[in-house]
Image (tube, rainbow, N blue to C red; front, side, top):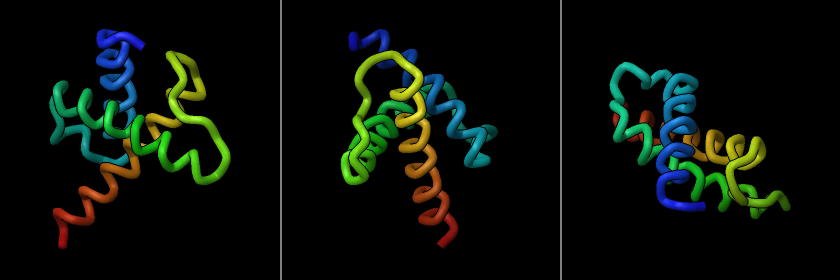
Length: 83
């Protein structure tokens, strides 16, 4: 994927993950992009353990993987910030 596609993909995935994780009010657009891109990396890594594929382009499965990874990232960040 190109850099612009990664930014758009990351922004949408990060935004949806922030809504799911309850952090939407505390995150800006740039944070959503970073969380979405890092979430795609984490999601791909996690899916490799269960036999699924990683992020392979701009499609629904890759979006699901990115959102799952971003939710995991935000959940870990929530636990660190609380404790």
